[in-house]
Length: 412
Ligand SMILES: [Zn+2]
Image (cartoon, rainbow, N blue to C red):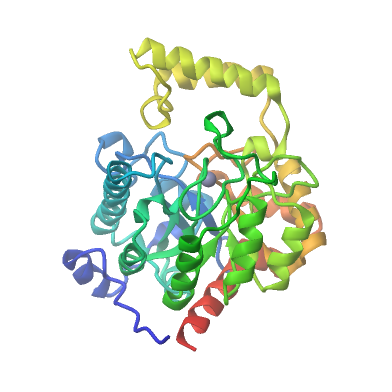
């Protein structure tokens, strides 16, 4: 089905005017020798109070791992900012809450774009991301993480596309009405991944995949169960992506993809974006237990029953506690990360692997622990023997190819 793309200004009339203005030169994002043509991070989280609380005003210095200054200094040209909502009950009240949370995040991204048009612009096409790069501007792209926020209403996918979302992540932690999760809520009776009860994708999930194909939105299978990935490969006419996933053969974690699925995503022309997330790169139960203990203690000190990453992660007690934990249980390193990338390239091919940080959603490793350290990734890939051409593919060329193909398939 043919569909005419809306203008990129879907975030609001004011933004429309700003985007139409001639691009100003962003001197801060000047290219350095050895930089790839474009660096794209396909998964950056944002707090619910992003651009609302002064500490999360990304035009200034922030405690976040990604703000505009860190992107500019580190040479991170473009990021998919993620509309994430936690999984809740599949009830009208649950859907309404998720919808409101998603709405707040779209508005936050819109606020960033309105306030800093001389530094960052929305990109809803690969061509726009590249044009922003040429103009010395950062690019913000938008991805959905957990289609629970669609509220079981296909029209909301169209609305998300109109607001600029260009990938749709089907599920998060816990099963939803689209498909089973790689981390189902087994404590509340959801079947374990790959058990007899694991049903994979639902009829609604299939509708979302087919609608995404027609809109020209990439289908993202990170967090999905293995069966759901297989179903997405079966039902999607266009290539699919995993916006932030690793290799299970290197580190056995349900969030990492097994080799057969890495191969299958590649065979369909897609891309898997290797993620710099500690627990998918290094098994460290001591660290996990220490972090859990710290989270519980910080929440309790605030009078809360449960740890809330948005509220607690940037408090001094948490920052100090994490520094102590880091001394005892060091994070995964760039070497661990490159090891996974090398394996993924061996299995899926150099045209089917990319980069994702999951910054501000738990991501970050020694050597790439915020956006200002982005050039360390490029240097580590070069040390590992990847050529400049390979690095250009991994850092964005592959993702842009898939994105273009998904756009093309939507028109034909
Ligand atoms: Zn995630």
